[in-house]
Image (cartoon, rainbow over all chains, first blue to last red; front, side, top):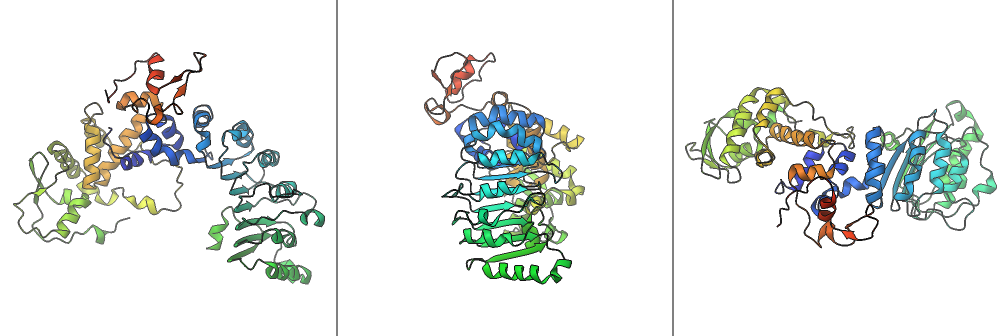
Length: 257
Length: 210
């Protein structure tokens, strides 16, 4: 089998679950380690079985956690169970935390992760659950002098904080500058909050915004003035602006094509 | 997915040709083979082969593998349109993390592939032949068979099953920074992967680089 070229092993791997591939072929030889590199880098735990989850946490992460660059976790149970392993992924660059809309327990789990995110995270996606405004403030820097995540280039916060008090103007004005942030996908309960967010992102290139503004409210002159002000306040570097009423879909890109 | 138009080859009659393997065996091939092997089809389209008595040399394939591929194509000549292709590569809806099915090998294909073994290396030979000839259905059967053998096995079992060589001592995974530290023995001695293996209850496979 040694003469079977790498590309044929990759073809064989297409019929195996990623965690099975890592379980079966890791630590065999430097050649296989090289082939497995991209499989270590991307971990998607959505719909993963308990057997696979156990193999990942007990056998793969302790040895190869530092190679993981991208992680997707789903629902409060998984978010809760994975807490003890997040510290094994010091080089994580992409993190997606998702949950079902009625999974309210996930709020607290997400807070835990946001408090412990690797400093050099570049992509953070929080989707599906109700996101407390405190989480949003934490990600955007809160009252700190420098951003919590200075490398962040893509931020998606599609949860809603409808059941919480609006963020006060004084809190918004304390946001740090996020000069590296290029893409923001955000759902805001109160459209006007975007005025406070945008000045902290001077180099934003893509903005996907949704708000609970509905058709009836389009007749509300005050709301419409607010929307016009948003349009005027957008960074001069912005290349793409997508706005929709209601709520952005899980994959805003699809609706923007 | 390939269309009927794309499946139509451009060469004109005759529709039977001869091919020769790297060990000099000569075989007759017909439409059943030509339609399923993109490599042969492309050769016939590019080369101006007027004389069908002159065998087309296939220097990368042994006679036994070429014969098996011809048998496979003859059996599958009527399911041309259902041949799995690389169309999935263009399927953006497809979840990249979701493995493809490998439990759908037909009974005939299972019997066919049984003649090839890991021990003799022939299972890998037929996969490489299918890849060279670009016969998607045969390649899929070979890859699925290997995937089914591997699924659920740990790396020690896979090493034994396929007799995979270790990195030479001091190189690759056996460089000191990559070696496995013995925790069970309570010391901090660095062990090479071979040494770790030798301490396990199961015997270590023969090292191929010796």
